[in-house]
Amino acid sequence: QVQLVESGGGLVQPGGSLRLSCAASGSIFSISVMGWYRQAPGKQRDMVATITSRGTQNYADSVKGRFTISSDNANNTVYLQMNSLKLEDTAIYYCYAAVRRRVDGNPTDFPSPYWGQGTQVTVSS
Image (cartoon, rainbow, N blue to C red; front, side, top):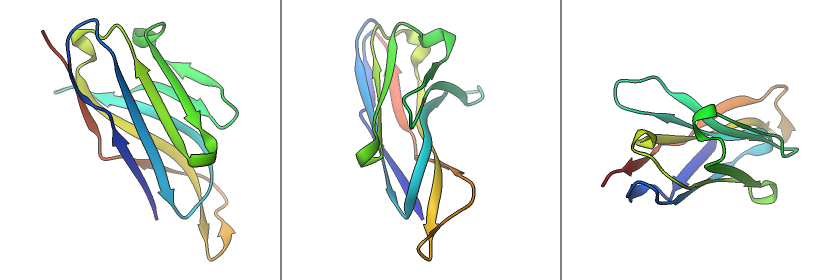
């Protein structure tokens, strides 16, 4: 199986910064996309930022210019640097990865989605 473990959430004042990390482990053959989604109370889970294995980045309009996604492909790790945090950034942040697993020594044909357990980010004065 595949596990995604997040870290770095917490409480921060408006205008502050946080850095989230997510490490994937398990029977991984390759990861094509990693990213971050978030879900605020009473709202749906929305994409925040994604990065492909080739480094192509995609951001939600609400975080462009404030958040930066990066990855360490060799260690199957993705990061989210969050600057100039706003009250509306408060949410549970989930790590995502599209993973081709290694099964009996062979890669699966197509990637499957995997999620972390989520880490709380609270922006409050």
